[in-house]
Image (cartoon, rainbow, N blue to C red):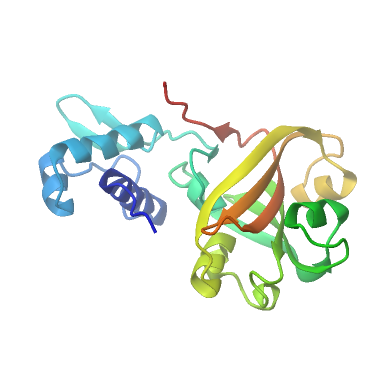
Length: 238
């Protein structure tokens, strides 16, 4: 497996500290020299990590004062790279939790069968969850996982509530990349009831197909996100 660049490792560590509350809003980060010594890297590498944290509004740099954890991080999902819902929300001043609607083995629908390359009606795993931020419904996610990838998935509790972590740590799945499409949609009566809102409300519908290290499909998820929780993207220049 290819090792992440050092600045990414620093970035991930600081984000995890923010998410865990070890670094509170307005807390000052150590200086560049101190961070360089702490992580055993150059100041240039530290600056790369801080640049990324700054661009995603995790931190604020104040000239002459230092770098501080942002107090006004925009609430939303960052989809710059493949990670769990909780990690997408990390640093956006919201506590993430889930309410499981269903966790069961089910028969593959025509759409799911086509994605997985199996027969319609074959047994697959299905996990449907309402994702909440500060106990407020933000998104509905309907995840399908091939039975062969994680046979006991629906009979055990997700590790820390994370499907990706469970696939990785319990079933040895190495996530490689995902293809995702996004479009507008209107909530059905059932979806609206689960999200605590009205039928026909406009939402962002996303379909994600996730691949493992060997290029195999390990997950297919459709999600519906309320407009109060926008998707945040960083777009780099070529």
